[in-house]
Length: 274
Image (cartoon, rainbow, N blue to C red):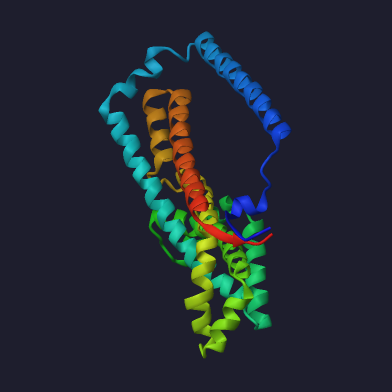
């Protein structure tokens, strides 16, 4: 088979045949019918319990409600972006330790990755919220959510970057060294730019996890979308409708990030030999 330009997804997964496509269509049709039935059952239950009463939904017609939710959404974006930058920076440093030829640094990187991947994000948040102030270090609310979320995500980011580095053909490094380039220059000018191109879709997908982890911000009273939703619930006594709208907003954000990752993945082509 001659060389062809395929996406990473096409290279890893074989396209389904006629029987598989038929089975997928049938399964999709059944799933759609089940989802419609489930939505109908939920709406009917809402009607029976009175959750569709105008008093639980009328405040969504007011501009002040959406402005307040929008302010919380901006807080979510702010916390997520800060967490993402911190996670990418820390993940890059840990990745350098992990791939280092120094055994001590490599062991530190491996231990950090295992630790951050094994400890729940909520425990990191409680540590920065309850334990860190005991040492006399007072942080702004956004840092109390951004730092623990970044720590939790940085281990995964480090592994994603390391896999990208390992995916770059070894011939690239050997060719650069043969031209007289130093080892550090080879990594930063040849290896890492290509590795980053491979893993950008995975990094964006990880940002979805970061966005969802920022929902813990209500613990520290940071005014994000979830915290502002809780304020509206206390004002209007409409927990179900407000949480439902907040959930839809989060779903749309994560959906757009996933579509962005898919778009970048499809536009990133690699040469695959049969």
